[in-house]
Image (cartoon, rainbow, N blue to C red; front, side, top):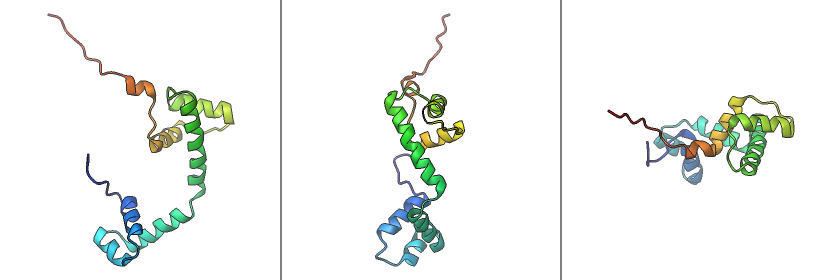
Length: 121
């Protein structure tokens, strides 16, 4: 939904967390979320998993590459850069996922214009 509220469960849990001086049970009921889901979210936020910690480290390295090469590298080149610079062997899909989480785009994709064909009669 464009321009509207993003009502994903994680966003709703953040809102409930902000309003935690009220009854958690009531807030979860109003948001149509389970109370156990809220407490699981709180636990994940307090104690991140090994994967999340590793992903955060990789995100910092991806940001470094993106800034160093002024955004011209896509996921394939970033994967190669990580392998050559840090000797990190990861799948290209993981690089794509991390790039989308960071909302980074390859500069050439942003500059690419729509090409239309013109026909002459």
